Length: 488
Ligand code: 6PG
Image (tube, rainbow, N blue to C red; front, top):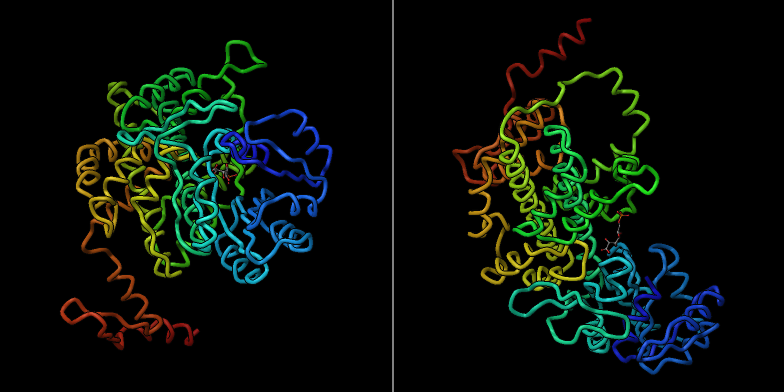
């Protein structure tokens, strides 16, 4: 990632000084590459600091966590000064970035920037999601705008034609200042939470086609390729089509995906998103389901053992095949709308918590290109927040409301089929429950609150009284179980 980011910057005419703790790695890199802006190899951090024009801009690309503090301290020891900008481009937790900005104040300007798009994105155009001191941002903006992915100004479609030494010229950069301190890393974390649910939803669509229709990976890959021509057009759908159709290098005539072990790893950003949702009391249940689905997948041995004892129906479907494929597409689309609604609701709440002023139209617009969740759909979200910057929930936008109205019968059908056929589809189901819960003026929480008051005198509000007025009933039956217990 670090090498690719350096090359991307140098492709845009900026001279870049590079350092790696293993000098050999740095030397090989310098010998191999010759980008237009030029690279300056540095064997020590002192050399690196001396090689950069003031105010220095130093990008750290190391594993999130303690290594960031260690490297920042080494940079300070090597001569970094108070006006210099130290930029953490990893997937750091936003609270760490808030803490670091304060901790290093007066020693350097510590700045956090999300970078999304994997290694190829870093090389040819990532989405960049910067947050920190606004004065520092003025120095970074020209570089960030230059290296970011570009989208077409009219259509919002990514322009994906960059080659080594030949960056994209023109287009709108997928780069925008998010806000102070940890805002950039927070929004990058939400991007990743959405990435988790996007991936899980795609997996569930694949699995339903496989289980209910007995389709091969190649056949399903072709369906995803066709979906990529419509509303679902996105990087993750596109790579899914490729992955499903990839032949296995070992077993001739078979598909690699059928040999990949069904356990998914995770590095933590989805978990952070879910924990943050719980902390703030925001229902981001579909995002959390995506994290738990990975956790369940990791229990491979237990699942294999349980499968020998726990029973359920054998999947079967005798209806029209194309109709079911279309229904699965609709279920995926509706669930995806809910997932984004949850991600944006989290950001809405977080801005209150951290005193940020987030521009949701701009955030959606920088997700249109370069990043892992880039999708045609992001233009629609940009439009929704451009129409109404204060939109309470994406589901309430007229466009998305209409989309769900058009597709929800199919969504419900697919969730029903998954349940009756014993096929796990936690993200589809959870997203539908979110949708139905969010549109319900009345929920069974009246009973729940009654229970709380019954056993714990936690009080309740009444529908026939103003909000904020609390009641408690000395429940006539409440003491009975206790009496019975003491009577034993
Ligand atoms: C990106 C990705 C990137 C990385 C994830 C993977 O935006 O480029 O999100 O940051 O691939 O951290 O996360 P998991 O290992 O948790 O799946």
